[in-house]
Length: 192
Picture 1 (cartoon, rainbow, N blue to C red):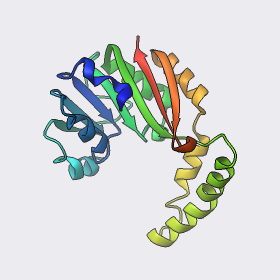
Picture 2 (picture 1 turned 120 degrees about the vertical axis):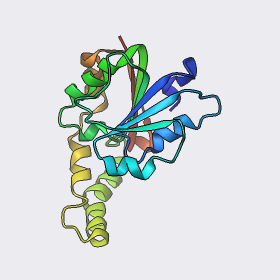
Picture 3 (picture 1 turned 30 degrees about the vertical axis):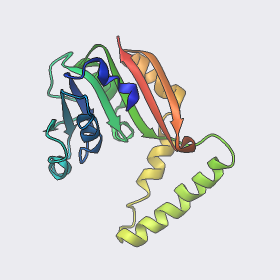
Picture 4 (picture 1 turned 90 degrees about the horizontal axis):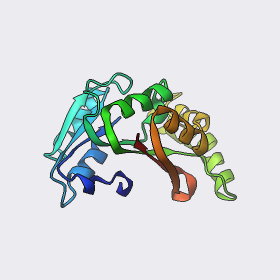
């Protein structure tokens, strides 16, 4: 998460939203020169409980990303790992993140994407739309368990559209880069 820039305020308070089992929060908290704390927020409290002992500087909080229980301008930065795709309102979620961030602080989002280049794109789409759901159903014995992921990724805004959502929500210096051959993207912005 080099784009977060936590080094500017190593004793600050950071938010990891849609934190799940707190892997990303713990990664930040374990950095050698990090002296602050990370609030790991997710509405699925049992997942937070599974990760609560990963790092001493991580504080798990049960919270809805669309109605965060935090004061305005409370955090020095925010990360979201594979979570914004699941928000019922992307615009509302990003505006809420902007509300709790201090001006000049960064939001960094890691999210699945659909590769654009040949030959990765057709191979990825075949695997994602046909093989992954079948394998998921065989392993989990759940008929729809792995159908949601491909549809949510394919319906998610493309990088330029997501950048526009960042800007509407109150972020400047918005950008993005591909990782893993375009299977994922890192998006970032600075709170105005």
